Length: 213
Image (cartoon, rainbow, N blue to C red; front, side, top):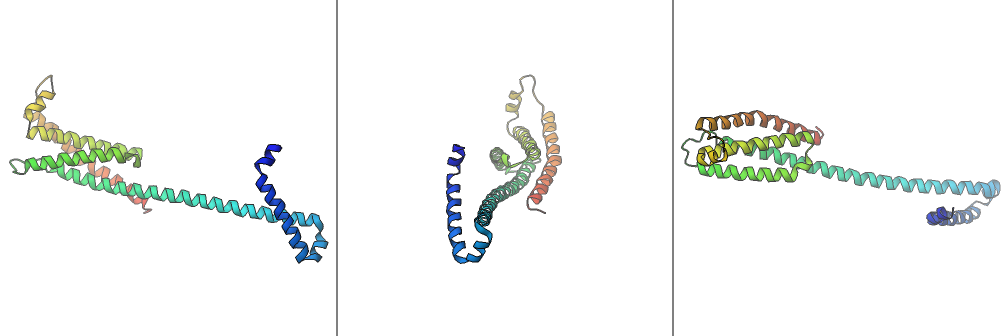
């Protein structure tokens, strides 16, 4: 009991003060009503007013808490929408950079295109690792899958075009011929062409859902 009183000391003091002030005001302002209802009625009246005060106060605190949570949620949704838009654009740019490597032939800008694709791929992987906490599990797996396809495609395309000898050293058991390397590259190109539109569509749907469309 003692602990309960100590814990609610401020509330009890407030109620006593409130009751005292209300009593004085009540008897002063409306003496006839005070005589009619008596002290017991006045006590009930004071308790009702006190209860109303604390109820209103708790309601306001609850509203403030809800507002804070709503603002936090809206900020998170806004950030998720921004990241989704960013990756939608990054995937399109990355696919364009890699598509350009598929049949370069004797293009004089070949090295430039490979360098640009390599930098884009590095940026894509780094940003994905930093931003993936904003994606749900399904979308994270889809983008991870695309990142792996992009990496494999670039690996085979780059070594096939520039350093086939180095590629062969990476396979200790046997050497890869040009035909086999080309098959690897074609297979990854096919995967890229099939998978990328699906992931872009998933991002697009989730982006619209975030916007409430």
